[in-house]
Image (cartoon, rainbow, N blue to C red):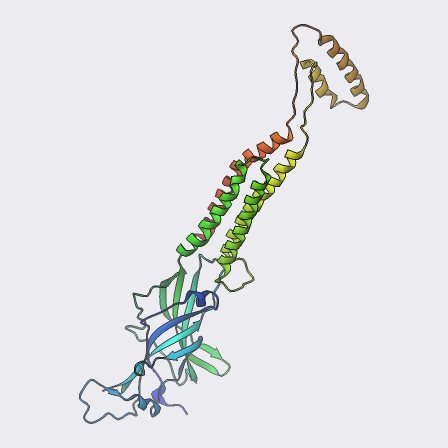
Length: 375
């Protein structure tokens, strides 16, 4: 049966304090809020006391069992706690115009579907939805108070988050049984980067830079360079595990994954670089004594590489004959041509790495912070 006095029910919802638990927010995708919930509605069937002269009268909360009140519930709540210390924290007022005001203090554990693609540069959007349990919009409508629908305690301080914006919305949905009135408070929670900057980014960057010290260590110091590379890799693996400890396991790539994976690649590359250096250190020196050959002889030797087999044989014989004659001629310079030894190549790789690795890491930082730092 429809009652006309149910229509146009106005809600005044006030939020005085919002508390967030970082562990709950990150791992369990929930947040905790302490609120004062104020509901007001008008019931024309009520009879005012004849001796009521004040603006409103405080009624005993037992009246709630004898009068009608909105059947609201928190749609995305996992747990709701009613405060009873030191007395039950709720009261009921009756005004002259037969308007009732019911206010209660509650602690809510609310679910919040979070997305971590940009973590820890993310901004989460969490809501607090209040819906009618059994009355459709044909019988009952919730409305926000026009003056102060939401009041947020300005002294709220969250460990790693800032409430960048909050607003009220209408979240009425259509079900198979009808449209049920719904109101929502939406919070934009922006993550502060300070914690991760000093506990993740700076330590991992220092670990990468530490792995470059091996480029200045002599290639012969194999234990020192291997120990430094392996230690840096294990340290980075531990840091990566710690950075993921407060997150739920998700199947997509996060911003922190991009950073830690890139740092791991740099450390592993420095270890691989030493393997290449050590390989060249073990090779025999590549040099050839060319004493007795003049400039023209060397030129002839270069030309031999582009001739066919027959001409090569002829040119080689002619070149040797000329070299024997000119080797005894006064004033003809003699040359010794040296090819690069394995050690020379190894030292060159170390010198090149001293410039290449820092430059590549600088490019990584520019790309990463340009992409995620502005989110």
